[in-house]
Image (cartoon, rainbow, N blue to C red):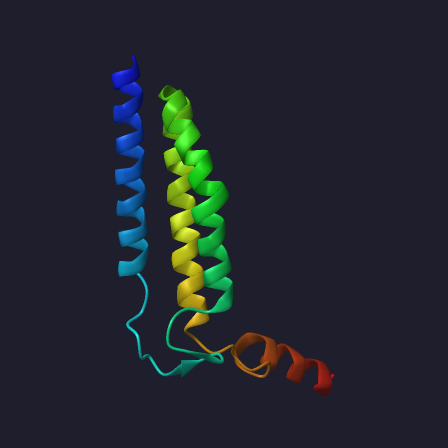
Amino acid sequence: MANMQGLVERLERAVSRLESLSAESHRPPGDCGEVNGVIGGVAPSVEAFDKLMDSMVAEFLKNSRILAGDVETHAEMVHSAFQAQRAFLLMASQYQQPHETWGFTGDLHAGERTQ
């Protein structure tokens, strides 16, 4: 049984290393210019999300893998959702916020003024 615990711990360390390598590969290259006040790297919101992923979510995943079964399956779904959320945050941080007068809302306000 002690041998099994050692193998589980090694596997958890390997998974953690792979997850950190995966997270680094999804980050933009070093000098991307300035976007939304961020020069290179990632936005503070993405950094904060990464801290959450590396702390509480990683602990949740580790404990869920120990419990295995349906708990582990659910944890992997939760992990996929968090990865998708990170990808969304990263993409959103790389684009400028649209002006209020653009698109549909601008047309609505224009219609209100003419009535």
